[in-house]
Image 1 (cartoon, one colour):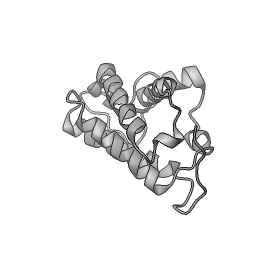
Image 2 (cartoon, one colour):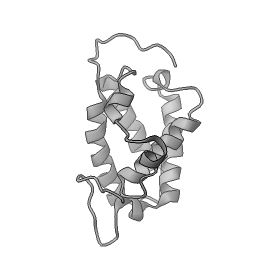
Image 3 (cartoon, helix red, strand yellow):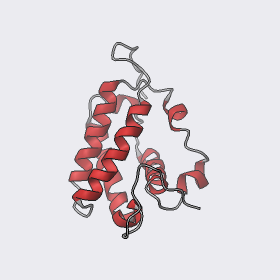
Image 4 (tube, helix red, strand yellow):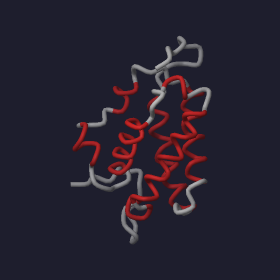
Length: 143
């Protein structure tokens, strides 16, 4: 059973996943991680090979947007905050993550502006919850 997060709208066009579609979502994730790999604030906390990370993100976003619960089926409950705790995530890194996602959304023409705005608004709340270290926190070792 698919559970739609309360922060996403269910419209006559279906869930946000239905409106975006799996192909556009996969394109978005690919664009996003190409930006993450180049970002000086984010690259140090991600593995050099982003293949598995992108696959997990795609599975998570599919369910998060109202599609099939792929992440739950493959990996169990996301436990987002707990899974991100080993990484130093400062407010700067949270903003960098959102900036990469915003750029990827804008660069994915098959996602309408309205759907991109709704998606981004939901992600801003998630990103804020992942911040676990103040700016003056310890340096993050390379992955």
